[in-house]
Length: 414
Image (cartoon, rainbow, N blue to C red; front, side, top):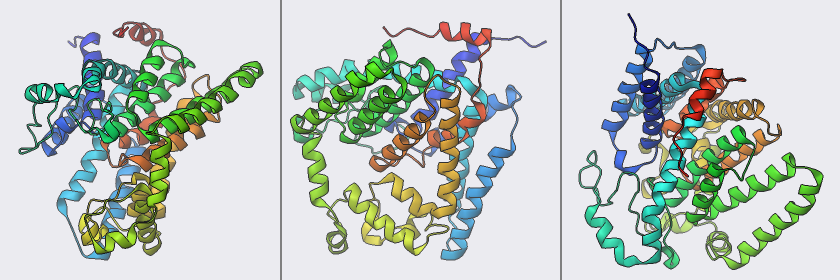
């Protein structure tokens, strides 16, 4: 006899979504052990709930494995661990989506809202004074899966204590503020699709937390999202009033806030640093110069890309210095791999918007925002983003009455 435990199943679903995000950017969970552990746990639940594989999963998995094998044949380099890592990342993303299905977006929003609220218990004191740095560091712990790590974590908050320009930035539990901002932005898009509102409690929490990251890229993408939401989904009167206000607010922020205007100007002024990097590996790339390096790699290997192996992808003097996740992804996988990956991700967001009350064009906006996030950070090789590739297979038009009741039981963070 089978005993149904819906509350326990719900807790497991939340845990799976949290762990997928955790191994995709929370330094406390860095390392092979957490990755393999989450894969094993997700696969066990996958089997216990008698979920099934589908052709879409095998198409994605074998497409990228074949491309990776072609890279190996071309460069005569066969790194076993790289193949295993690729299989694990794709598979764990699929297993979690196959288990949680259409509830994935709701659970992810709840988790990020919780982490947002938790982050302010640490961000606000650290923002007010640097005198608390040593105290928080004393109670923080390094990742148990990466011995020798110097950065301390409070698990729900990463102690990234840098203060560029004298300003402390909210990085939540992720590796840096801009990375946290990317996940916040995805949560805001999911919540917008569910509520069609930027003024509900969760959206307000997410927007406030986004601003606290003080990330130029995230701020710009947030401005784009808000602009198009009002422009496409509101009445003509609201558009006439709100759009000029939004444009004026952004213009003021560009001039008044140093982490926006000055940072953009600095990025442009540094420009192409390729020659500097050729002579010295001590000069860090900008996202613009990274894109130029990636463009050269892409032009050399346009169809299949240069591969995901560090030994073949990078110039020896340039190892691990690319900061543009979007152009790096394209240079690594070429035209074929990029079309499959980004095409699948676009279809996922198209389905999300299709089954919402939002304007259909916002699916394009959402996808462009994902690409914009990739310019700032290297998200696209993370298991969470491989999960987004499969999201389109589990977006439902109508939730059952049981699921609607289940959603109402979600923990309140007000």
